[in-house]
Length: 252
Image (cartoon, rainbow, N blue to C red; front, side):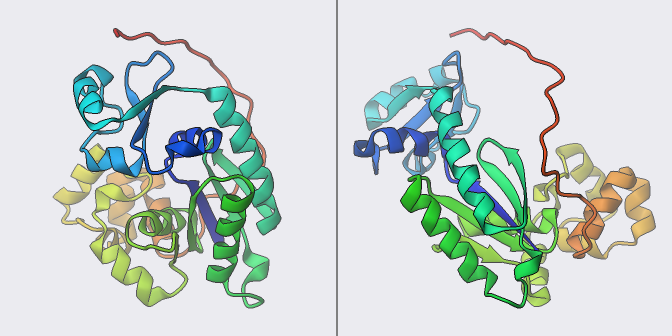
């Protein structure tokens, strides 16, 4: 079994750790050249401001609604990310740091010994108490299912924890999930799947494997197996060295 732990609105949450008076205040964070929106508080999302939206398009709206706007403080974000990840390692037997604000945690040895939902709630409370960052936790037997559970924890629950351990729950959620929202299925792949009448994650899981492999290649076949509960994507507990670096610019 895996947990996916994702920090909520991470850059904004970091700004709030640094300045608690920002709690409850609409906040957004801009890219390192202040060109586009890269993080939004829940209050800013409610205003309709999109992730990746050019800031000049929403500048006047932010002024009118009293939105606090920040340039990215990536030193702060990295420092708090390290603290979160160090704490998460205590809650499983192996961990993959997937991004600055997200990690997969293997908890297979705990199955049958404790309630994984309660374990996830304790993890969530510990991160909030010791670091000040709110997180959402998804529980499932595979990476793809765990990502789906995590998204459900963010959007469909008030507890911030959601489990896809039970097959009946899994089938219900997959029926409601559009295939284009499955982790690893991009827009073009979703369009190809719709042509063969695969519209939901449940349709993808139940389609003939030979048809899916022909439509999406081996990568699509692995996603299908993951949706069925068969792990195909390994946990990577070490980081690979970066192979490239780039500096980009955009108009103000």
